[in-house]
Amino acid sequence: GQQVMQIPQYQHVQEGEDFTTYCNSSTTLSNIQWYKQRPGGHPVFLIQLVKSGEVKKQKRLTFQFGEAKKNSSLHITATQTTDVGTYFCAGYSGTYKYIFGTGTRLKVLA
Amino acid sequence: DTGVSQDPRHKITKRGQNVTFRCDPISEHNRLYWYRQTLGQGPEFLTYFQNEAQLEKSRLLSDRFSAERPKGSFSTLEIQRTEQGDSAMYLCASSPFGGLAGDTQYFGPGTRLTVL
Image (cartoon, rainbow over all chains, first blue to last red; front, side):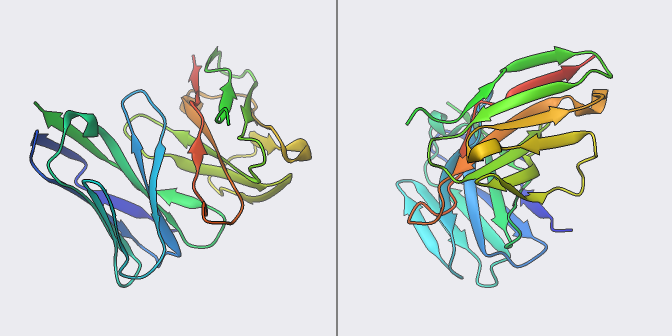
């Protein structure tokens, strides 16, 4: 079945450093979503990418969807302590369900 | 917009007992999802409703799990004859149908199940 993998599993950065997480799907996706989950919280929607090669920015966050629509990335510039949490991608391949990735847990050291 | 609510927030039960969870989606959201999340893992898809119709169910879900969404509003997830492996956070998410909001999923706070 469809699988979505994320790397790295964990990332510790100093505040101010950049951070990137990568998401890879075993199948071509119709769209991909990104979520952030704070410790003890529930996933919160960040963005949805639909088009091949699409790049979207939200302040310090940059999201990219691969040309083949099988991979995606999230890049955070100049991390802050408020960026702490686990970042999940969720891929949709048109069967009414989203497959979430394994997540990347980000720790930001002040 | 009061957000997605779930009840109860915590449930402790003994192995073999049945449990039922409730999810109240954001009003007028047509789509409703149930997920299960264990520590250190991403949410695992369980089932999907569009209005009252259950359109997709994970093949990983045993016959002990059943979900309903009568009248296309709130939804319930029942687990029969619980096992220790069922211990997890059960998340509900709702989504508006179509439009610019697309498939944005709004998650509830979850129900944490502990099976002793």
